[in-house]
Length: 468
Image 1 (cartoon, rainbow, N blue to C red):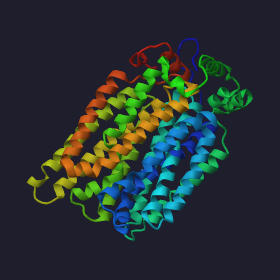
Image 2: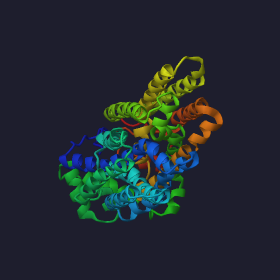
Image 3: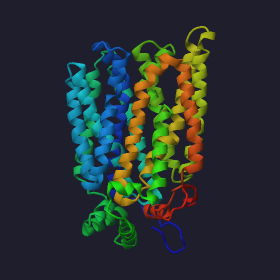
Image 4: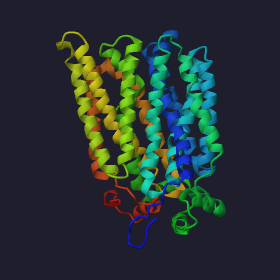
């Protein structure tokens, strides 16, 4: 909320906001756990079901088909039934999918469960940060929404630890079963929480919206913010799919869709899904050793994301993106060089070291930039009445690009080699850097309504400077 001198009035973080954000961010743990657990489990699933490389890719990427379906349905659900009920529904579907996967006796049953899990994380992946962005005070919104990304990395790290714990027994069913724990926590927590005040206002639930906003801000003096939200709603029409074609939404969609696709085409989820396989390429041949090395990468991911959470409301979104993507370019180039010249060194120890250092640098660079900032920006730049649908479309693009990268990784390795694949990702990262430099706005410290007004006026994204 702005006061007359043009500065942002910093609302204190209330216990209600802290609890609501922490619970909603558990959706990030679901996302992260399922993203990471397959990397270790696939080593044993491939053996048990005797999967050739093509079916291994399908088993790994089947969850992404569900995620695309979840993003399609989630955009409509988030606007129709609300952010809260959408997250509750995602938790229930995740639990059902986990039960099917754990009980799978053949690949077809396993795939059904994975698709259901994918539907759940496709919804939760963007509705959780959406809920957080609409309930957090502007001055803390960046860190609060990025907490969801921190929980994603925490979920990935937990999954790596679980994979290592069960690697000696090869019990991949137990690896998946433990994912039910955060799903149950998210389900119970969201049942006890209200919906976001902005969604409640968009559905004319005035008294409920005021009550939630007063709890979120810790004061009864919320009518200024309330008026800003009502004004933004009053200047919008309907909230239909056709509204996504409006000129005022065109540039935010270009920014969001561009970041969605480039975030994945830089290769991040090949590292997450196939990290143990990559380490095996570099000479760590035992499943336990490769999974342990992958856990080190996961630890770096958590630490770097925690740094981003602290910095994002201080230095802004654009600086983190530009520095992070530059680091990805360098680390991918070095990783490709390590594989390209691996035949010139004796033994695999040097290649293993280059692989470990490059992957950790790459993950750290992603974790301070494209990882948290993408999800934050798409929760900020779209108008309220179509925010769910616009985030749904953007998330569909993100998951579709994720699917494309994942399902082609091993095929590309066979066609152009490990070095060629990582150099290709480095090239895409260079394109991503220039995209960020030219088009991505700075939203630090601004209210969602101020951001919306900027784009409604037809102004260029780079003209949005944020607050010092």
